[in-house]
Length: 135
Image (cartoon, rainbow, N blue to C red; front, side, top):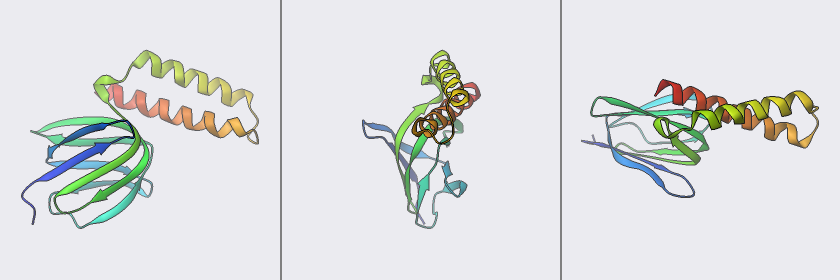
């Protein structure tokens, strides 16, 4: 059994976080799942949502956008399109993005190619707002 659990959160631009954690909760496409040290190995797809971890008895939250998570007994690597720590999210910008996406969705027919883009933008904005307000 592993003595520590290392978490890495990686986006195409950077290593967003790397450190020893007590536990990690990841928004998998099949549902949210938690990881503790000594976890059985697994590979999962990651959905839009809140990724959180506990480090030094403090919870940290990130808004993440689709990707993959690889889990071993001592390491969790999360590769996602984007990851924003809750205290770094610009609330006003997220509110504006939500409003723009809602407006687009009300004016577009479901068959329009832009409808899905607007739906995903709305999901992302809502998640960012939720994560930011939880702090």
